[in-house]
Length: 468
Image (cartoon, rainbow, N blue to C red; front, top):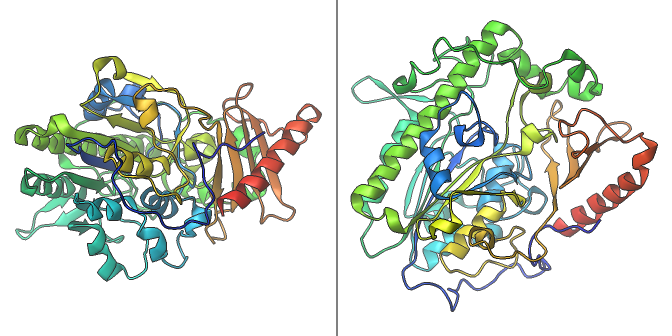
């Protein structure tokens, strides 16, 4: 199998490229509004067919835009994924996750906000930045004209001057509207709104509004009285079939925090869904500000998440591991300039989080740096034939944590391979998504799959070398 990381993936020896507009860039550059959600997988949207959760704002974007049905992150944890989304690099290349040294400045000067600012865009960032960078105090202002970060320790409810409390998602909405209203009429902008929602409050807390998933008061009545269905793949035998290092991992530890009893599950899932509907309403307010200012017809909106999420599936909580629930994310791109024949559809080609910065720069008519390891999604938006589009990509998790096992692997269009390389001995998984879409069977010892296993091992080793 040949690795197809991206269209035209180039040799990484050239770290810097000129920040220039393309010769064919449009005279009027679009505004770009990028919403990034925390801890939400691809199928927890009403437009994706979920029978309970209400996401009318995202649904409207999908109906007038393009929804990617096969979107993924390359590392399923917020720190590494958010660093990848800004730099366009795999974790192995930018080398950042929790506990690691800050991302090097040489990578940050290739980041999409820095490059946009150099060519005249007004850039803004609101919310959870999520990772460290070199010389952050001084360099952050070279990236953003407007910077309103949320400290990692910020609770979901923020005390106001009058003593009342407001939800952090609603405050981010206010800040986004402030940015939009203050933007000069003759200057294009790129605003990144990065929600803390729908991340849980870590710790074994009492379920409910002030517990694991604190939701805005505006959505407090949603889903009341509805019976939440049992999680997919909830048969205890599925959990028991895992190796011991996964059965004792953080995936299982946090399962006992949130999902292990019927009462906890029902209360926490309603609260989680309310948080989703809460940020969806905030997005609607922000988009309304674009309409009131009359700039909605030239503002491209991107919506995605930093990683997937287990909600009791397989007996797990959190993310971190190689299964689909952990690495799949929603991705919607709404470009009001596209003709109706190109919108209101789904795209099945594989998209990954490191495609987002390439896409943003391409939208602005700026050349994509050679160091980037993703690809612009614009050909897929414009229904152009994407030659040699990827069919597989590398997945990895390198964080040093005794109960989050490290792994590297390949997620292909049919086969998924992962090796948890620090186990003694190293432990491998091989799944056939065509025959076993739920990844219930590990085929490593199946004699019929030994040739595939050899090919996937080789591809994984070669891709890992290529990425670094």
